[in-house]
Length: 233
Image (cartoon, rainbow, N blue to C red; front, side):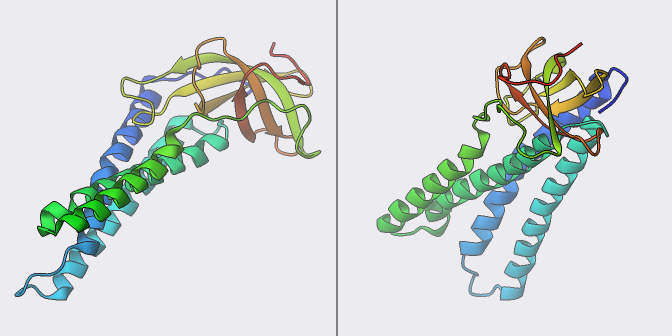
């Protein structure tokens, strides 16, 4: 938690948008991994060449995840909520899963397979896409009435700065700056990766923070809290 007001600068927005673009681009890496796993090697093609391309596709997938995480962490900075990073990681896995599902769906066309394998492959692809797309749903959590344990503090927070990006949600992370008051009544600020729409300037919510480490904010949940220790100042 910062004692000084935070803002979403141009650099912050650029790094967050780039992280979103890389995350959605990683679907191509997921597609490549699926295709290389199931595509057979040609008569004159050694197995080692297929394994090499598969390893490159896996390395590329990991690189997309790591670089996007670093960009998001850079955009949020030191004073941030922790739950948004975990959710963004699930977005990344979801994008890879969607790419893998698309790869399964197009696999019969690449193999020239029999009709029955078209049905099996397309069904499996749709199933994988459906499961992967579930992570892009909005957060369904609600404000709690009491701290989960004594080390957690609750406070009423309000969004004082907000940026939704130019791309669809999930492609570009939506960022917000949350203002709330700690136990001593001092105004605090933290950057937040939006977990649930709609979020705009003035959106009320509940902040959970670590009492032992006041700079560590765990989460921000949209909705008027039924219990809050300190209203925003």
